[in-house]
Image 1 (cartoon, one colour):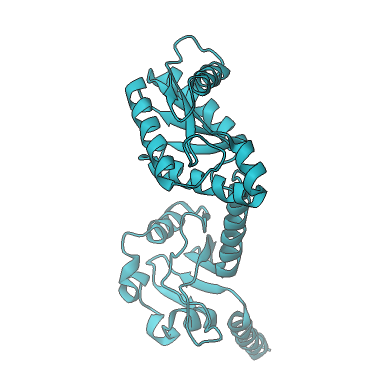
Image 2 (cartoon, rainbow, N blue to C red):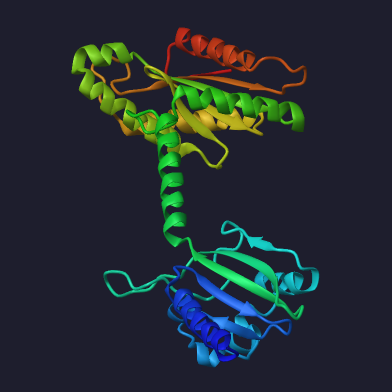
Length: 320
């Protein structure tokens, strides 16, 4: 009678070890001295460290890289306070130095992990820390791919397909942001409205395919003229482009306009119906400080008026 429970307990212990060996997650059990009591088969395969070399030793003895890590402090907290801890994969992608199973080519990627630490007590009141390790590499890679795809779609939604520069929708959003920024920081905001001269005549003479190619080349040199990450050029509509120049005074805006005027002329795109013989642009310049919280339309309207004046004065010039 006395031997039966012992025998059953032994059988149960054997079965439990088999169960732990077949689980698809890593399990590590530490005693109150942080010595390893359990290092299951999943951890053996992922870490390359045999259970025999882990049992009875602390994690810091066998894995010195954990010294001072988030998981080391979490283990101390679990054993001291008896509260569970979850390590977010977003903030702690590689708590343990583990590798994924070999891929088709035989290589093993670094494993991204989700970690849960739980306090346990045995019948004698001894405190333990159970660490559960889950491989979330595939999930993380899938989330990253989805984020990249979403970013690509967002960029596509804000890009003019013909010219490759920003579209009007993106320009209007950035204009509002920059205009509010001008109000906050007390810095002026510059805007250039750039129009390709006699573009309808160019299309009528050479065809829409040539016109599309012309606009793409003009957009490319306008973008080339920009000197700072915060500057932007967008296709405003048809043959008209808008150039946003945050933190730029009037002199700086005029200098940028002169550079763009010269770059377009240097393309030397033949224009049979232009008095200049090549594609040129007219540019309206506006520069304002948003002192009185006016609508951003004021800046656009001012640049449009300057552009209209440049056309009246003979085109291929700057006004404003």
